Structures are given as structure tokens and as C-alpha cells.
Image (cartoon, one colour):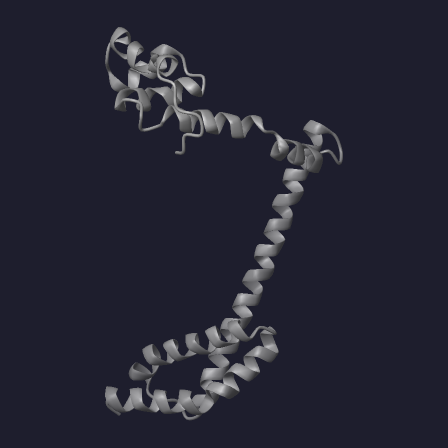
Length: 182
């Protein structure tokens, strides 16, 4: 059988068996979208396998078997992922629980999320990067805003501290208009 004949046989088989494949896979996975994806995966595998091995005696059953095997692999993978996530959650809960106290992990996370200090620091960094400032000031100012000392700000640019200091201190001289957008 030539490659063209094989592709036509695959097309015809898939056109005939598609609805049956999706229905059977949807019953197995309880998810129509996943069933359609698995049917398409089986088609792709058939397109790569059948030209080399030939069209099987029962192509519909071959497609269903291939798709079911992929569905089982996906279900196993999902279960493993869920177990790993639960394990990681237990480890994190244990780590937070030992530092904060039993049951305090959720409260600590909630408190950290409600903390406005992080938002204010981020706003300060955005302000330090505003286009109204010179390029050198925008480069060094976020480091200063984040609390870096003068030497650690100067080293990345390999310039003298005296030449960088005026650029970084421009933040104290330049005032941005109220309501400035980033």
C-alpha cells in the first residue's frame, strides 16, 4: 500500500470511527474535551505508525486501544500530580507549622497577602524607574529604593561613586507630578 493510500485509509477510518471514539473516551474520562484530544492523539499516532507498519486488520479498534492507553496514562499522570501536590502542601504546612505554630500557616499567609508594605515598595520602585528621570538614575534608583548601599549600586556600572551619586540622588531633587502614571 502506498503512502497516499494509507493516508486515505486513515482519513476514512477516522471519519467513520470519530464519533464512536469520542463517545467511548468521554465515558472513560468523563470529559468531552479530553476525549476529543485523545481521539486526535490517536489519529496523529496512526498517521506516524500506519505508513510504516501498514493499516491494521481492525483500524477502529486500533484507534480506540491507542486512545484508551493514552487516557489511562493521562489519568495516572493526573493522580500522581495530585499526590505530589498534596505531599508538597503537607511539607509546606509542616514547615510553616514548626515556625509559626500548628494551624498558623494559613493565617500567616493571609497576613502577608494583606500587608500593604509590599505594594508601597513596588510603587516606590516604579516611581524610581519613571521616564522623567535620567537613564542612569533609573538604573540605580530602584536599587537604592530597595535598600542597597552606595557601593553596591555603583559596582554594576563600574563608575566612581562620586559620579554615580548625583545621578542616584536626583530622586531627592526631581519630584513627579501628583497622579503620575507609569
